[in-house]
Amino acid sequence: MPNPLEKKFIALGVSGSIACHKAVDLASKLTQQGALVDVVMTRNALNFVTPLAFQAITHRPVVSDLFDPQSEVAIDHVAVAERADAMVIAPATANTIARIAWGLAADALTTTVLATRAPIVVCPAMDGYMYQNPATQENLQRLSARGHTIAGPAEGRMASGLKGRGRMLEVPEILGHVNQVLGRGDDLAERKVVVSAGGTQEAIDPVRFISNRSSGKMGYAIAEAARDRGAEAVIVAAPGGLSDPVGVRVVHVVSAEEMRDAVVAESRDADALIMAAAVADWRPAEVASQKLKKGSSERSSVELTRTPDIAQEVQGENLIKVGFAAESEDLEANARAKLEPKGLHLIAANDITDPESGFESNDNRVTLLDTEGGVEELPLMSKYDVGQRILDRVVRLMAKPA
Image (cartoon, rainbow, N blue to C red; front, side, top):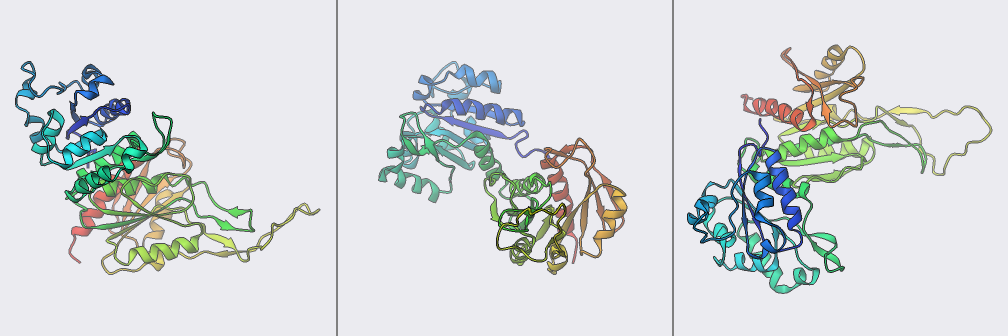
């Protein structure tokens, strides 16, 4: 499946706020991912950034005057609205939000909003007190009830020097919202996909624990790919320091037993389970209630006991189960040996000794093995793209008659 933004028409509405500099970066990131970005600016936005800044990035004309006779797009003011696959208003000031909420066609931006049938993402940016004002809150509720996505705002320091809620979201978060709305109605719409991620931590005492080098990046990437295809995506995440992805519900756990309980619970109504987590195979048989002291001995030992095999314990008549096998030798043989005992439909095997696709890397190189003896070796690619390739197989498995 291609990048969800590839060749998509995105109408980017920009209103007058100091956060306009983020809109330039947003236009750049959208363009880098293959989107065709049509920028529509209010007159107030021209006080903060010039149309040339956007045009130089998008290589497309910018609409700022609804009645500009030199602009072919502006003369046909619904052209941008009609071809848009999604519209993003970033930054969306209190004034612009009010105009949209009450259906005013006061400028090129609000006219485009009225004319488009595309999903709309509104990214508020304003002073904290303006955001808290009942009028602004009522206007946002109107837009939400109308089906628009309200993305933000975030907490933080604002241009006024005050701290509070009113900052426009950062660009990666906005992109997450855009991808989510574009994925509505895709091939995983109305499907629930559960993904486990990260390396579990098994306590030795209140300070120490046994864990592994898993970063959780692979699982998070799969969940984002599922979200972008319209799925209800859920991550059961062990500690890893990654931010919760936009549009993905995250259940935070620590130990293998906690992950088992969460995965079993979330899988009861799921369509697919993808076990990308590095679950500890062993845990201390007993956890010390106090910190263990070094003492004078040169050696110490901790008795270990097996942790639950989560994939084996999760059952579901129509549940598609995908596992991961991180191996350092005999990659295919070791991975295939796990397929039947764990009840998997598919397993993704990766060589942990490969320097190009280590735990902390943003890329991965996996081999997909299925129960029918099939082997598909994927080249080195981003973990997000690996996730898409795995989901391609999941979608095909879902389509097979039971």
